[in-house]
Amino acid sequence: MPQSGATSTPTEDRTGQRSAPATTAGQAVGALTVTRVTAELAHRTRAADIFPTEWVRLSELDFRVTAHWPADHSFFGPVDDLRQDPMIVAETLRQTTMALAHAEFGAPLDTHFVMWDLGISTVPSELLLADAAEPVTVDVVCSEVRRRGRGLSSMRTTMEFHRAGRLVARGTGSMGCTSPAAYRRLRAGQPGSPGSPGTAIPPLPPVPHELVGRHRAEDVVLARSDRPGTWLLRVDTSHPVLFARPNDHVPGMVLFEAARQAATAATGGRVFLPSDLASSFSRYTELDSPCLLETEVFDKGGADDEARSPDRGDDGDEGEVTVRVFGLQNDEPVFTVTLASALHRRSPWPPPRLPPAPAPSPVRSLT
Image (cartoon, rainbow, N blue to C red; front, side):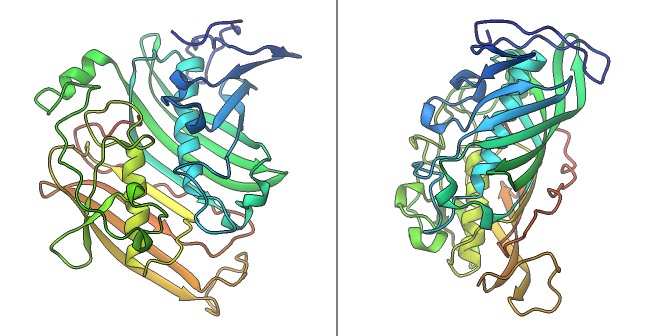
């Protein structure tokens, strides 16, 4: 069950359906009720890994969330000596979407979430470590809400992130909801039981952590392959953040990190601060067979490039690089992630959106 405590009044969403009431562990502030994010709602097991902390409902489908991005997180720590990891934006979006789906739209806590796409656009120059103590305000709009009976079938969330009054990022993602029974049918015949660890390939030797922009070998999710310019996905199911809960497939957080690490390696191992990320998924990435990552570097420019957009600042970066990362398993595509490195922008572009890959099966779980 969702959190215990005071219960807000049920409201109608823009589909004309009445949404399930949010249960709170907080208190009413004026006409608004504060709902706290729990580990259950965010699908995390450690408090240190939960980035959204609480929210208020502003209208039927509009919410204001407070988040905290710690400067010293064990995995989403600083990428360089100045700035926080932009990937924490994507993880905050994921956690916020799941928490709202449970507490505000009636998705039971045993729901399996599946992701169709996710995109973020950030201003890395605003992700300063010096601002890490400041709370992050996330304005969320839910749209494309679809119901299955009284429950939630799917929806999109679009978010703007501000800190200290400045726009830091935008993001959007769409997801679907699958019941435990439907998930068992969907995953029938796959290694491991749904929601439990599958038979994973033993972790392969990691590439040097410096090559992929990490400080510790245990956070590396790439291994060498026998083909130049490609990597194998390295899956360590004992990792306390990437595999915080049992899973019968590779979690999305691992795939995002693998794409960023592949982009870092493909561009020479320099600091890679994603200013844009767009992803789409065609099927689950399984634990029991190798997953090959291919990269394509298709856009590169220097800091003096006259073709740069006029709203892009110049604070010493050497240029912009865009990398597309393809995941292949058993010769079938499983995901595509496109990342652009940071030329620091005074405001982010609208978050990129890729169309869902054409596949009859749903895509991988958010959890």
